[in-house]
Image 1 (tube, rainbow, N blue to C red):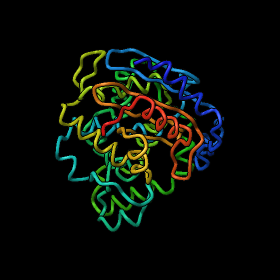
Image 2 (image 1 turned 90 degrees about the vertical axis):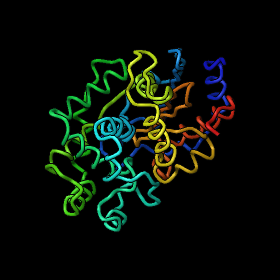
Image 3 (image 1 turned 90 degrees about the horizontal axis):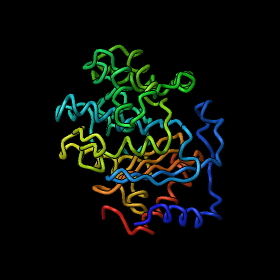
Image 4 (image 1 turned 135 degrees about the horizontal axis):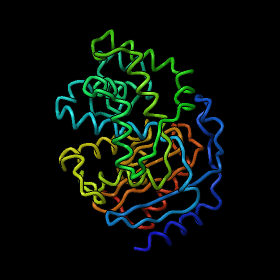
Length: 304
């Protein structure tokens, strides 16, 4: 399949697309990003690369990093992980306090903020230097040994992180946070601050398109059973309150971030990343969602 030509054709079809949306306004640093930026990169299991637009420009991956922290925690805790966090779509906003209290401090899934905070707590509990070890893990997957946390973005998020502080304090009170709150919050804000290009991020997620095996380095990151489960959670919970819409129109497991990035994988075939900073009302990249819908229609590829 000529993926380069298909990407170009889909972009041509997007010429009249007007529903760009706006960059995330509640994080001061993200508010400054040019909403007209657009990049896409696809990498196949055989390490064939195809890209266009601003695919080599770094952007804040935000909640996409929650998949990677989940993978690390799953490596460490196996099935015991699910005693502290669920695998169900939330059906309420990603930062809901009401649902968390109703569920007695057990977050519905690892991708809402409360769930990601529990995952961070698990990593703080098990790793000697969680920030360094997590960053090294992402560096290894991405093939870029120089990736760093972005202090400018993490500090920006800390400055408005009142709801996350409320979530973690509630879970601490209900017994589902075991470590120092400030330490866990600092780790959380940092992992969301990582900046990557579409190319780097697509390669980072390629192991999930290859049943847990990194096809480039031949390293087994997750068992095929665990990789299947991570993909299932992405399918069900990867797009805030729009996971059903993404499954319906795109048909791939994926994860979005409020930096405007979307990563999606087709098992045994490829990993694709689209970046467009303008968000729709649900917090997902408006142009990115439409591009992937047209792309999977053009290629007639989905998991269904």
